[in-house]
Length: 298
Image 1 (cartoon, rainbow, N blue to C red):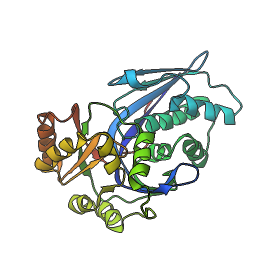
Image 2: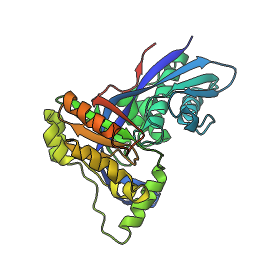
Image 3: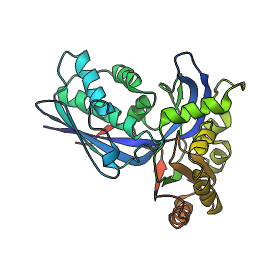
């Protein structure tokens, strides 16, 4: 028997970042929107814990116990007094090291898949608790849809979304380390008065109304200057999307994937084609959101 779980990518339509805390983390007001790019995580009983991966950029995915899928399996097994003897296979489609929470999504997917495979029947609250232990973005990958993440992003409040938002994502030629981007944020804001992160009410209203133009006027990412400082070429990709008619352009999370909000599917296709021929990115994907969270498919 095996269990397969599908997990979505995310875009941060708002990422407000506070000053570094004594523990090294940052308080966030992080508005997540799940989008229709998915990884699939399949778990199968095995003699020992093993991780494999296939798909675009699979060679960049660690296959040892540092991978969140292995940590998720071990965390659930530890709570229920069993060993994590499973083969976990990741079928990648979410960009690796792209600021779209692919690794976090895989961790959430492995956790849900192991829960179903082992019949542990963990409560939703317990699964979310384990997700929070694994990483700041992991709880949202389980929940999907749209949510406001506070604390370091792991405390979630589900948000209403009144329509479909169309997105184009441009994949960069190389990755960016999330810790490195936060370190650069700290360097750029050193000596400055960094305000407490607060969710934008106009942005929340735009999501609730399903209004892409209002959302475009409200999107923001406090990590974008840091990402651009470490990867200046991203500015050319953002400019190409803007020139092609995107309503809004932003770096997705810690980057380096860039995100472009379009008015509708037709506009998204035009932006995508312009980006493909711009010479400023490695590949381009179009999709929409919100998308469901981790879902058992078989």
